[in-house]
Amino acid sequence: MSEDRYQLARARALRTFPVPADHADLARLRRAVEDVERCLTDVVSAGGTRELMLAFSPDVEPANGCLDDSDIRRTAPAFRLVTLAACIRHCWPDHSQPLYPGQAARQDDIIATLTPLHDVLASREGIAALGRTSHFLAAVRFLRACGYLAPDECDGTIRLGPMCALWAERDIAELRSGYDVLPGPRKE
Image 1 (tube, rainbow, N blue to C red):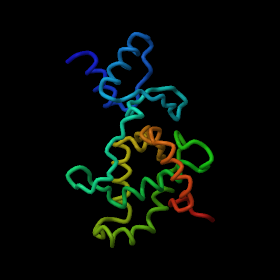
Image 2: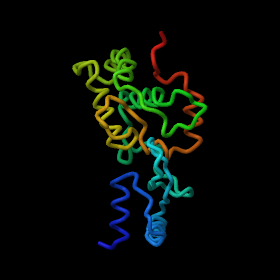
Image 3: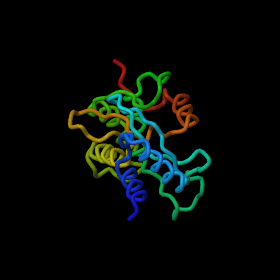
Image 4: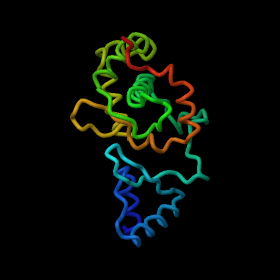
């Protein structure tokens, strides 16, 4: 395998990776990325370190699910979407600020927000046999694996993942306009 292909595979697997210290390595990586119609995007992690991430080039629109072809896409189950919405609301308490990296939120608080929604989703999704929180916890694991939530640091918190940093401004504007309907912290 050529070095360029190895670097691309590594970049996809790691999602975010440190900026190469050698300018020649960075230039070679940028050329390899451009050859596959991708680009490198700067991402500042929650710890404040600058990293890079593969993204689609601005002139390439990835498959967005507009086609109604089940062979091309699968719709996400409602409990995953609602779990992501709750995580966004809890980790992004001030929607006038940038979405990513947001702030850490307690996982127990997010799950507590979601538990009352269980009965509505269970009847809709046919998951009544599951426990009241098990499917939301499974959704958190799935969203972490996909990069929408940061990896588990075993501290009982949830953070937004680097995939959120790649969302277009028009998508973030939609989240801002619908911010009040996202499942959020309970008001005392």
